[in-house]
Image 1 (cartoon, rainbow, N blue to C red):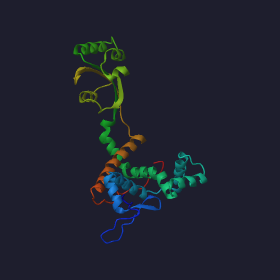
Image 2: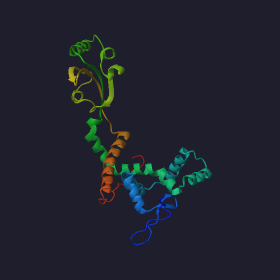
Image 3: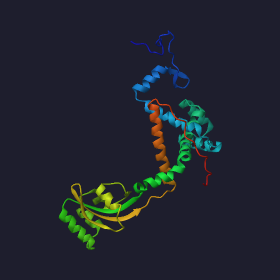
Image 4: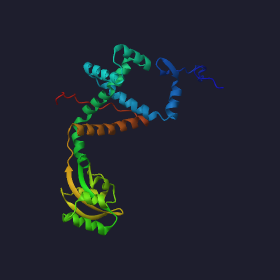
Length: 275
């Protein structure tokens, strides 16, 4: 039976044992550096470690006002069911965490979000304008039919006002729109089959398209309305997150490739709360 390396550490060529220095439990060294490297490599943990490193870089450079830190810690521990100082000490002991660990967990999300906003708030509008056609959403009515002649007939009945889309979709449609009475959306303008998208991009509200073929089906479509994307607070946050993810993936990949990391980008001053 093999002996645990903790009881009989392997000797290096120098004859000096490679003692455990990496902690699994706090203040209880368990792994040597070589064992830790092996586990990271063999268990596929390198990507997670690289991502953690880059996130930690960000967290360490963002300071929060003391009152905000206290509020975030309070919210964090209350979510864990901790409601008193005594209970907090017991919880920290049970989890083997220090108060600094708690502070890190409670404020990490806020620090990362603040870094993202300061770094990318000026670029968010440019990205929004570049992607606006993809971000606009549309509502349209749709019939998908296997038979060309039936598609022509239903198109003319709708055009003449003899029948409406909801009734015909429930009775005749061969697609999932049968369950929504023919109505699709709101969905991104750029989503869907190219034959649909090309017509949606040039449609006017209420425009009815004659039957056209999409794959094996014949489609009758009416454009209902366009819902233009707006650069409100929610959309700005989405653009900031997208820009951050591009940078984050690139920086993590540099780390995975063993390349030197450039300094963190410059952060503009933080805006006042009402800005």
